[in-house]
Length: 171
Ligand code: HEC
Ligand code: HEC
Image (spheres, rainbow, N blue to C red):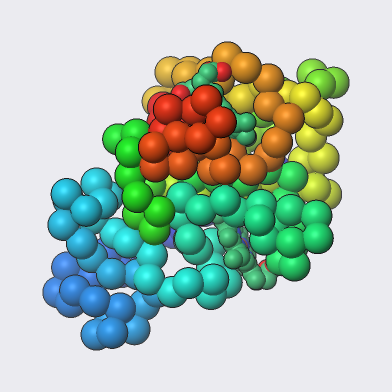
């Protein structure tokens, strides 16, 4: 399936440019740099619901990207992090593989982008409910034990966890 992969060279150029300027106001970009304590990744989204592949990391994407939410529909979406209690807006962890095995045994995979965001589009990933999900880091699998009925991963995987989750999606 097509993956939105940000060219590494460009990422390096932007991230290098960012080290010279601290705020969205002076870099003109939809995020700014923050201390490691505020966001482990050192990057924080700064542009509300402006359309972007890095938009609103940590938020309940399906509020807008679910059926009737107004934005284009995804079947599942969310953000993966390293430390488990990062605040909304903090960029998460890139290059993690999100693997869904749906009710029919069909496997769908995508990779987290620079914001830690990931999403599945219905044309490519119709995802029959209920399903299993795992996160892979460097080939090591971290499965969610329970079955998933709700593609809004960040609804439960909030900063401090909701609906029995203990925090963010982490590898
Ligand atoms: C407050 C509503 C809202 C939330 C929450 C939200 N989005 Fe969006 N998103 C939009 C709108 C509106 C657009 C632009 C119209 C469209 O593409 O549907 C958009 C566009 C996008 C796009 C297309 C960007 C492009 O350049 O092609 C992606 C990908 C995306 N969002 C992913 C996410 C992810 C992942 C999350 C959660 C981490 C999220 N969004 C949370 C409203 C939202
Ligand atoms: C209804 C709430 C809920 C939703 C929605 C949800 N999860 Fe979870 N998730 C949990 C709970 C509770 C646990 C801990 C128990 C378990 O593993 O089943 C968990 C555990 C996990 C774990 C194991 C490691 C960890 O971070 O605790 C991963 C990985 C995970 N979820 C990923 C996802 C992904 C990806 C999605 C969206 C496709 C998702 N979850 C949707 C509640 C949810």
